[in-house]
Image 1 (cartoon, rainbow over the protein chains, first blue to last red):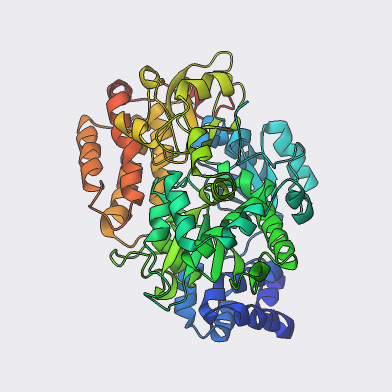
Image 2 (image 1 turned 30 degrees about the vertical axis):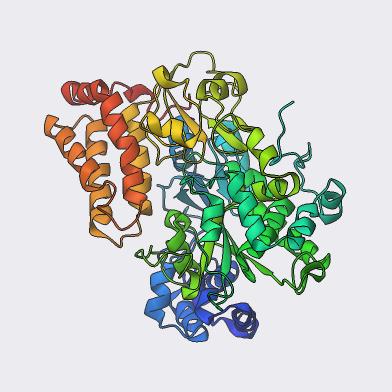
Length: 165
Length: 431
């Protein structure tokens, strides 16, 4: 992590985010039930959940940090380590595998000079394998942040990478 | 013409109808009718329709609803939960319904909730289904504005709140009792049964979990009756089914067809058969947790009993095709990698056994396997089979492995004897 990023994640949640989290817990039957939503709000602002933020959220939800970390680390879509500006979720399940998913992965690794799970040197992309995205009739498939892409081939991958600044 | 009650209101451009558009094509008429019926009458109609759960297990929906204690037996709050956590590899049917006909799901939720007298419903959607989440949330707001959701629905005295929850993402959340843990803000770990979830589910209250496709079947059944619904089927179970095909077929996709449509009809008529240069080796009929079906058995009817009779299961009815250009051992390794990764880690056989299976398959695929490894895999099939683990994840993982060991025995032996993968050239290939 660079110094700039460290400063960024050491910044506290701030009043607005704390207020947003308090609001969603009001609709929940028990505060802890809102923990995934709360962690996603943190991620939306800071891209991942740092130790400091985790402790702050835990206090708001009346959970211990260890309890909340147990939940946070359980899920595929909650990031406890820094990620790039764009997160690529590349499907590695069976339908995509049959349709050339391994080739798509090799192509992305080569273009981005990363291995699955890593972030590019310029901090632009993190490449993560993900379980079946339910887009099997357009395999191979992936998501870049919230956008879904199917029928991937080398040219289409290059085009998507180029457009994700 | 075949009737298609699940997909009839889907527009050619795929954009969902808003509440007014949905009403114009007959939407929410079933809710009006249902609210004038008794919960018992609704359950009885659903039972007569022989609607069975479309998530894979195939439990009778009417019986599931009936198991919830009646209002006068228990004063507890109760819940209806929609399992929209579609993560079974190779399955993409619920995405279609969520994205393209959200109001039909909501209508099914209202009727189901009324039948079990639930005043709170959760729609548990996987976090990656961004478009579905957006469209559902909008549809709930619209339904609320029209008085179909909220307090005293259409003056019936029945009230219902619907929450849409976006999951943090883990396959095990699709297991009903793990889903309760997830909604309670805990690690999504399955729970011991008994108690059954109809008695003690979410927050310890009576709860019913239904699949998206199942609930979408409910409004047409209430509107047009169980007999009409039964008549749509080509099998003993009622209705239609969203069958899907992916892999090297000419037209991968989804089709709503009579329940019990034969596998070869789906593969060769609807999906158009194999692409030029590809041959079909075997299929997974309903996701990663189902045993392979080989071409000799492709005349099987795709209903619960028929597929079970030939040693597999219907699962989600979304078929993955393995062609001759991909290594069957590689495909098994891919499946077991999925299960090993998605094991919740709670019980030891699953947590330790599945990664072991994956390691053995990886070694065999790389040409480093030994003859004894096959015995070891067979041992795992029984050690991780039904009854040995806390939930059905590991037994599901063993279904394709057991059938793979049977159907691809010679391919396993070739890898071991030749100390290499015969499909080595296509490993990282696009085609």
